[in-house]
Image 1 (tube, rainbow, N blue to C red):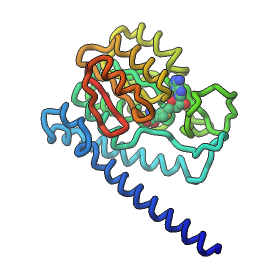
Image 2 (image 1 turned 90 degrees about the vertical axis):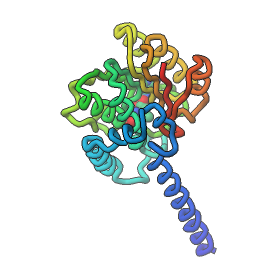
Image 3 (image 1 turned 120 degrees about the horizontal axis):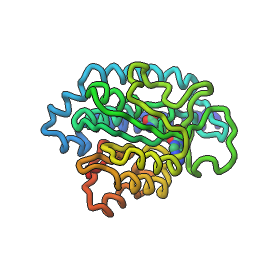
Image 4 (image 1 turned 90 degrees about the horizontal axis):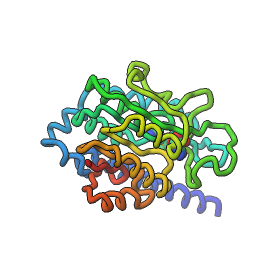
Length: 266
Ligand SMILES: C[S@@+](CC[C@H](N)C(=O)[O-])C[C@H]1O[C@@H](n2cnc3c(N)ncnc32)[C@H](O)[C@@H]1O
């Protein structure tokens, strides 16, 4: 009987491994093949020229190394028994955002949701290469091992946490930090004063509280001050319909870096 159960478990694990491999291959290719990002570039080789820049290839290697150290034990759990994850944007999606910023050269950028800092690192590298632009990031981090009162975070928050003793954005290389301002707090409270101070923005990325209400709130706040031809991008658009609804409401065409990361151009 035990042998039978063991074989079943092994088989199930094997099947999920192949499904995972199949999907990760799709994700590997999707920056170019399975997405609409290429349509905003003059041609495929323009996009490739950004994706193949040595600095971004090196950043991917550096972040992959940091990730291995971050999660030495894949079975590790958070205090609320979620799988302990660094909750980052996929590296290929990061490269997609990098290419967009390299092409459009925005000057004022706002991001919500930093956590360990993977998306911020890609954005800041693009600004460094462009030699222009400033990124303002808002984050309300969850730190591993800390017990938070119920209701501190949004209801469906997963296991994205930063290690104890680290600050949000700790993976961002030192030489990229001069164009970065980090604001601690919830986007619901910190975004309105930030955008009224900045007045106009060129690029926005949502990756904080993925409830419908918060995502819609952030898109609406930002859209009002987004410059014409500015970009509003969002991670985790498959969590709910807010991104699609917002594109319909504003009559803007949605573009996709991957099935999970979308953007519109005002
Ligand atoms: C998915 S992680 C961000 C990952 C990051 N963009 C990256 O690529 O590495 C979400 C982050 O947003 C934070 N957060 C949750 N609710 C928030 C809120 N209302 N306002 C700002 N940040 C929030 C989480 O604690 C976490 O640090």
